[in-house]
Image (cartoon, rainbow, N blue to C red; front, top):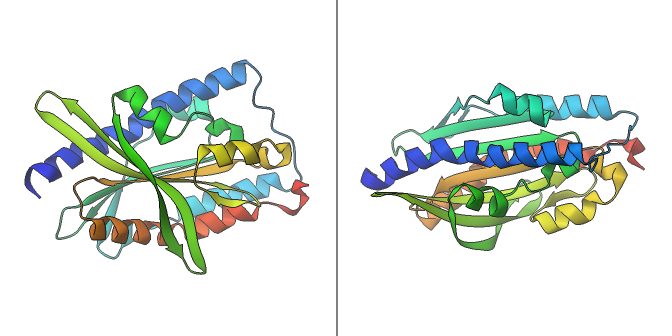
Length: 237
């Protein structure tokens, strides 16, 4: 992979952390100004536990990919109060290709305000190169998502990446954009059951075939998480 691989390794190390910085600030401000008011729903605790367990069961090994957890800062956990947050870097045996997976589930869908690529990455020096609709297969159809492209330069070093991004909401399933997230989150019963966000970060220099294959592999591994979050609880109103 040469220089491209070297560039991607650094991008993988820095991108998830920068995304979390803005998320922490926004959630703190939201709580200070009373924007987040979760509603108690019977069965929510059991539901959150099921989601947590499914995220914890995301495999470390799949079809030649080997995952290593990225430590999450304790300060971020204390400020965000996520139900579960996972950051993991996967390396493909033989090719050295890397994919970074970020999965976060919050107890109120409005905790996701501002936490999406067009806000997080430009705020940390990344320049947007474009966005397009994207799909990935599940066992009974496809999910709709958005793929964002970014680059960031520091002297002679240029970092480039794609971010395959989508949200999952109870009773609504997968939504591809923040606009849809905001629309659905206006229902307090939905907001109070939280939301999950998934970011699958791949090297912009990977071929289209490599990118599609990797994205499909990771979305397939996330299907139990997607279905558990989307199921919600019966008392959600």
